[in-house]
Amino acid sequence: MNRLRFHRILLKLSGEALMGDGQFGIDPDTVAGLAGEVAAAKAAGHELCLVVGGGNIFRGIAGAAKGFDRSTADYMGMLATVMNALAVQNALEKVGIDTRVQSAIPMASVCEPYVRRRAMRHMEKGRIVIFAAGTGNPYFTTDTAAALRAAEMGCDALFKGTSVDGVYDADPKKVPTAKRYDQLAFSRVLADDLKVMDASAVALCRDNNIPIVVFNIRQPGNLAQVLAGQGTATIVQTEN
Ligand code: UDP
Image (cartoon, rainbow, N blue to C red; front, side):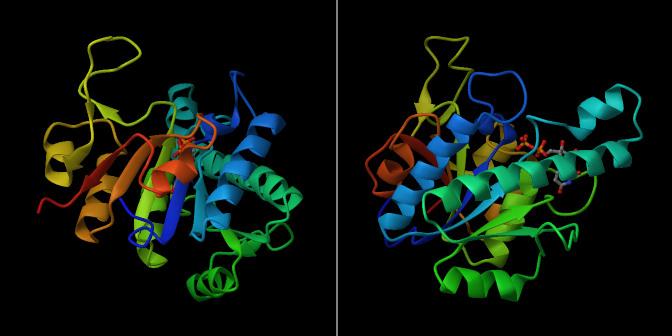
């Protein structure tokens, strides 16, 4: 894992990563910490764009289980990601990083609409683009949005920040003997249904040859370390 290989990355932050130790919502200190992680990666010379989830506020499937129409619930989930994107933007700008939020659901008075060429231009100017509202379509997830935007933006890798340091053969929080993989093939992840990202996101990365790097975003300094090839992570990529 060297720096040149992963010059431009898409960082996927789940809604849960913004909650801190809470059960719900956005914790400003946690978001400030994440901004610091992103700032360190940028200072090390990487180009970053972000996709943020919304699970800390609203998840379509959970809403549908409570009786909402699935599409309506998914639109609510997408709106939740816009709130998270604004929180991340605010924290990044507080540490002096120029950012733009682009939403897949146009919201003219809140942020820019998603326009790929414009997003590219922002990145060329050294800005961090935060993609909100997922793909803009119900029945998708922000993992799929992350894979899609990573492909569109020509990213060298998709970094998935989680609360564990990679992909294990069992849940490491429940099974103490669980083994962590250093590397995995896309085909193995799909065949064994390993919990990396949802299958459509993994397939999109496989088809576009974009490695997925799963790492612990809760550990301070880890993003920059993994980018420098030093931290602990699992890399999912095409078999050689
Ligand atoms: N969502 C959607 N289409 C998308 C992306 C997200 O409908 O392209 C909705 C879906 O309801 C999802 C919610 O937005 O549950 C929040 O996204 P997600 O669950 O992926 O967030 P995360 O788990 O990363 O916090």
